Image (tube, rainbow, N blue to C red; front, side, top):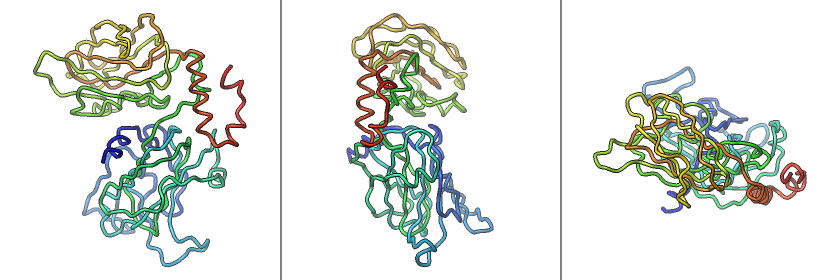
Length: 349
């Protein structure tokens, strides 16, 4: 399915890696709802049991026997997205839940800016992203979403009960224009950066290099297969906003015997050289000043000949006209009453 392949390359906005958190679940009697947004696939030990029964890596509620005291006939969990954005699809993954998965689920989103309390989030206006849909057990239930609104929180409801291993919320991170002043990392996932293409992702995804923080292990970066030809590997990053780049950080931390020997950086659209071919060291955070150049939207990193890097930081500033365009799109994606409450001075000053 083409749509499925398209949105699954987008970042998981709910991931704990990006700062997502589970704010509330009405029931996690058997398995902790916080595991829903854990990075990596769910693990399973068929012989592992606890005092309450089988131990699962995911969220599992007890069996319902009719409506509860509030009259509810289904279970739900609320997640605050690590990065607000436009949701393009979800994966309600029931891995390892075979006789105890929910037969149906639905997903809604809310937009509440700032740092709202749980009560404020629960009282928000919720928009349906996925109508009540059938689920398969022990499967990745991948569903496209067609909703043009900025989401900050997501509510997964399972009908009536059961277990879900992981919830992935794939979408376009939309930067808050109020955070784009001064010098910022324009390639960061949290600012809307996205890997558009790469030559090879044999060992790990190139999207990892745009993640927050330092890499914990080697697989937390991008690593290519060993080349046996005269070529080299590369990736292309679409910046969260067009900007004038001043500095690049190419971090080979964790790559001790398999770091690239050299790297270069260019504007992928104009071909302007930003960083000539420059030597790299293993297991080192490198910082390089970039050549003066006009604002860029797409940047290409070439590594020679192959290997791995853990992080790529593209530090620059957003020109006023580009920042205005970002601000107008951000306002258009907000619910009208919230857009009206934003002081234009904060956006366009």
